[in-house]
Amino acid sequence: MYEVDFTEFPSTSATVSGQFFERAFGWSVTPYGPDYTDVRAPGLTFGFQSDAAERTSAPLIAIRTGDLTAAREAVVSAGGVVTKEPFSFPGGRRFHFREPGGSELAVWCQEE
Image 1 (cartoon, rainbow, N blue to C red):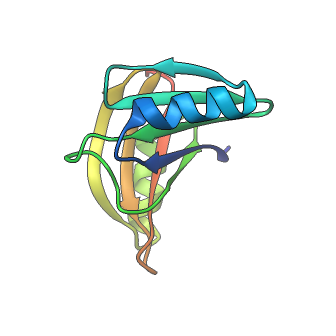
Image 2 (image 1 turned 90 degrees about the vertical axis):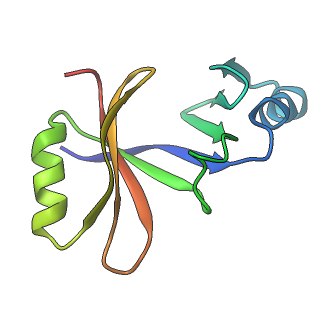
């Protein structure tokens, strides 16, 4: 099963972005160091990435799966190009890919 459940936004300051949503809307913020912050709103969690080496140029939609290996194979078989091989992050593992139209997305799962 595949489910869109997370969006990661590029930011010049993950800390400042998180603080904005906390002050403006009272949403919960979890910083993961100076370059990454999660924001939890009712029914939605999204993140801000400010590390220039990791930051994408556009929002990154993340698709959750139970089998990262099978998802990677499905992406490649359908004509997608893996742009970042699977890697660990707080909460699980993920890979990034570019679909044939040019948009970059991610697929993630809890630690396998």
